[in-house]
Length: 395
Image (cartoon, rainbow, N blue to C red; front, side, top):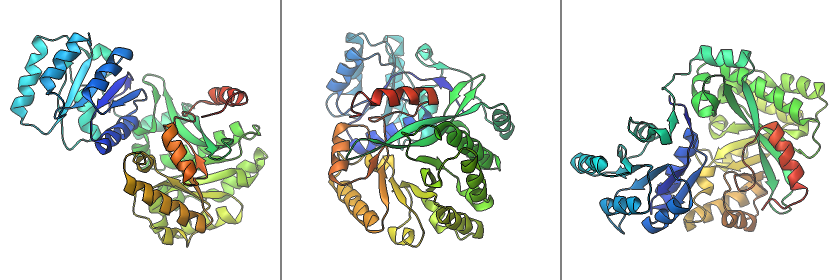
């Protein structure tokens, strides 16, 4: 797995679905400064106004061909890296790449369709003269021993992303998101270690650590109405977490109703005694239960109706389509109406534009979170965010 210092990246893609899918992949990899354009001309304008380091461009954009686009990039003085996305014959790709000998722009490896995260990483970080634009360290492998040491050495830290009431725009709560402050590789997102942790009980160790720190951090902040904490299916299937949560909340004098446990969709289909005991006891003791990433799996609201959930979270990949696909709008509206009929609050994740926020408010979504409202942040940044919120509106 690669670890790298992120730079500014521009997507040029006129298919909105493909563009959003690509953006979602880049975010999972760890990129944060992502710009997007649906045309060559707008893309060129962004390159002139922003310090773009990497361009990902569909080679088959219809306005001008890719070679003409390269010449335009040279004309405006762009000296970064471009990776074309293509389903073309490899001979054409190789011919275009040979232009590296004559251009200030570096033409990186082509990303062949269908696109995957692995293909993106391999293409962006293939050796080339412009790798100074991406300060990449050597590929590393995160092992279970590495994760165990990280937990033992208190290197795993909490970030908090604000969640706001859609109507009043008042702070509702925060979602707890783990990060790894690695001594060699810097701040790592869960993309680099959660999958490995889930193959062992380390995923439960991470849950207990992040939940303890969150309850300790936020129990003394009255503005925080709710703390949402993710738990894996493995932990819920194997660990009696309810007694531990009760004891930890008592230790820090935090009411149970201020803690919401987020579960992924697949959990509703798990027939496991420990899972059912945990879900039942959590609700009996006043904890909230949320279905996370709704819209990415195969659960149904009728199945949810048989379990004591209090909240449904619409996944970011679902919300991304709201501005470009009317059928998605209808599905979201219908889902919200059904959720409300089941007495479930609805939270929309990944809200990034005023237009999306406006539509969600129109659809009566209860709560929103996303970069428009606040990025994931360390505790110190959260304090600053809360103090700034007192003097200005969030959107």
